[in-house]
Image (cartoon, rainbow, N blue to C red; front, side, top):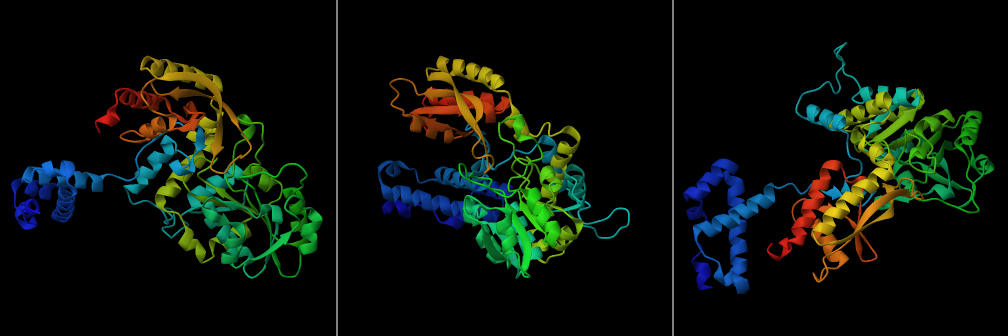
Length: 467
């Protein structure tokens, strides 16, 4: 306790030249806050005893505590990581990587005033999503389109605009729950639409929908089961059959495509995921899908279809609450134009999904050789990558990975090695299988290989022992 009395008062500390220099650089408010927290850390260390008893109570030491606090507060909580999991659309790691064009577009509009809701020809106010909507129309054949901040918002908005206080008829097998406890029945209740379940979990026929129709039916709803599949004795009603029923009754057909795809997934798998274009061509009146999954863009919800239905959605009061910002729209427009003009070339998600596994094998062999030279046990084996993000749940994408064990005698288990890869600077996220760390290089970009090797070199040198 006597040592604690030797800690100088805050106002005297801040008059010191070292702290005055910090104030000039970072501002008085932040320096005061961090100095207080630094002093609290110093007091706690002294009271704890042990190494804390050796702490010098002087301005140099207090300044070090303050600077450490300022570094922590100034550093972004979102750090760059190397994704070595093989999961391309990794929700916990931010889902899709933007292309260079999309990232540049978002950065440009972030720094400038832009024509977000301003018609340059007429000088009148316009729709903020019109530029993106025009590309969506070209890509999909839809009459019109609108953009909101994610597909969950799109589902909520479409149901509220087209089926409030009316029945929305949906198959029991499509009452899905996706990440974050997002459940279709809950969203329907929130939107004001009335859930009308038809069929059974595994079999729903067109006749089930026909029997459910009444004067209070507002919508026929089909939900794509993005994150699971029903196999075996099952039957579902095709979009084209529901479209025929929609045309016959005048009840709109809404298809929630979930992840949504503009490309043929047979380019990298044996499973065909119905594209947005195909859903609309089959007769869906309106569809919605994500911008940050198989599309490979920013987080967004895209709504496309008949002009009269999209108009109802766009004019609904919820639209203002769910609209995206200018950075999202700029990145989305750039991504959509890459699909329109380049077939999706240079979009990271597509590049990773279609990457030849023979190329990945060669990269694995080179990394394996480097790890062996550092003393690790390493071998190249076939693995299965995944698209991730709730897309194509039954599809395994053939790939190669490096299976690694720590140096013999190091005492490090595979879980220890996985943890050390994740900690410190330049975190690497990997997975463990059968007491080996598995590095699937499908999701590791060329320039990240050097980071990966450097991380293992630090571990080989035992950096954590001195941290």
